[in-house]
Length: 293
Image 1 (cartoon, rainbow, N blue to C red):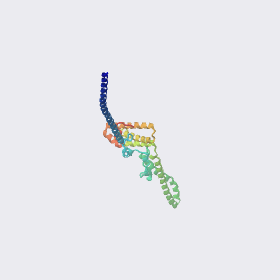
Image 2: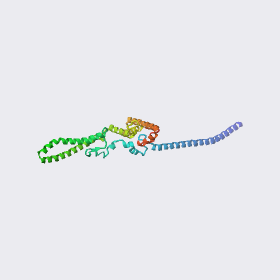
Image 3: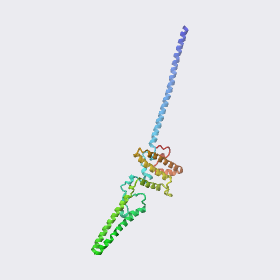
């Protein structure tokens, strides 16, 4: 019995000593492990915040994938070659659109721009020769009536001469009014969207073609300018009609087509690539890299 008591007491002392040692040892290890995990989580959180801040800064200065300009540089479009070249409805509503033209008959007030198809020789026929010939024809039609009054007496001849001069002035005023009315009818302000697009395409081909090879529609600069004009017009439409899903898809295709043309030009001739981007108000970041529309 005494032996069993000693055995139980020894086992109790051993168990108590082992539990105390185990408790002291595992608490230090757990504390170290917890500190390591907390440090890891803090480092990961700091890295994520740093990455998010870097992404926000990059997003703040990233060029607009559609317009091609960086934030705060939207004014480049109004001063670039393409922006000054193409016609818009706002430009056609300028107050000085109709003004006296020295080359026209009696300085008639004509529009600055005419619809497509009106060439320079057509302008001379319509606004220089035709009014003068019409006034002359009206004068000749009344010549027979005035001749009878001149044969009656000299006083009647003098009166007929005064009437002749007054009627001729009326003929001139009438022809000037007709010329101005015709000018308003064929002015660019009265054209429709396809007519304005035709005029803009013609201007772009003339401005961006090689001077030694005018009318080169296959030139990469011409294609990029035409695509940029279409992209701008479609973007203006989509800002008003936001639910137009079909044209949104078309806009995405045009943006990637423009990037493809300009990347091809960059591979062919880097100097031409760098020269055409400012003319289109485009930043290289809007062409190179991944384009997310």
